[in-house]
Length: 417
Image 1 (spheres, one colour):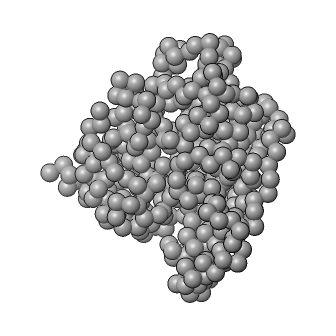
Image 2 (cartoon, one colour):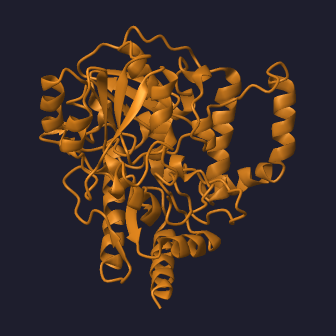
């Protein structure tokens, strides 16, 4: 049973910024990147090692859609078993169940690496796929896992939703897998986006359609609105801010004109809205043009540099704070963490107080699948209750970083009294 529930409905499983239904105030700093002019500063736009280095690529609407497409491309379905880490969010499991396959949960170690013994114990003739997750941006030993998969005739999917950037054994993330998936929304200031990539399998069987005009309009407006809500885009944002003050009226008018025939149909995928449900309707849709444009034009080397610098600021600031510790305190070359994972002794108390202060928090794995109990994987269960994450993305302002760290320290110290 759960030690204590941490009711967090800010939908941080998908790194969103929306106000949650627990009536916590909106986050005062963005949990995921928001557009600013600095997004495009620098000349090196595509040279950072990443999953995008793969030979074959398809930009889709979300990482979970990319996972489903990989499974479908391998004809995974009813009667098949897919090994998934016991430490997960629902969006990692939903694509498996969409195909009709069975998700089987394997244990992780305290450093979030895969427990090979657990995988070996769970293998059956029905096992077809193993999903390997680079938790928080820290690569698994994918070279060893590639050998394991070859030995047991398994398809390997690298879940790079937390690790768009990085290298292992001299190769970019995604290199050793049959398929790799990414969630671009966690690394770029975009509305929607996922990536399916492979160096081994052409993806030309996967046919994708252009997004509707409705979605393109919403993608553009949402990106701009988010930027303005966090005071980005400088004087241009101030000018555009006038429109945000009447945005509800404008958006209602736009929908009345352009979307009158859509009824209750969703204009965008739930992942873009912060949910973690699976939307089959978006299986064959490309990422929006504006999102793909931003990814292409982003200064990626600078992105990686800023994320690493901010992450290490957390490490230095929290190293002597009693009652908490960061799961990973060292960064190998090229790693760009998605967030900073912090273990708290008094997690529920710290979480509640920080949320009430408007501190941006992501809580990966808060609600594990009903099939996962403390006996399935004690570490996964413990981390679901004790580990919460904080932003380290490239679009954070200096004063936002300082404020978040200051609030973490003060709240943690108070909880220990």
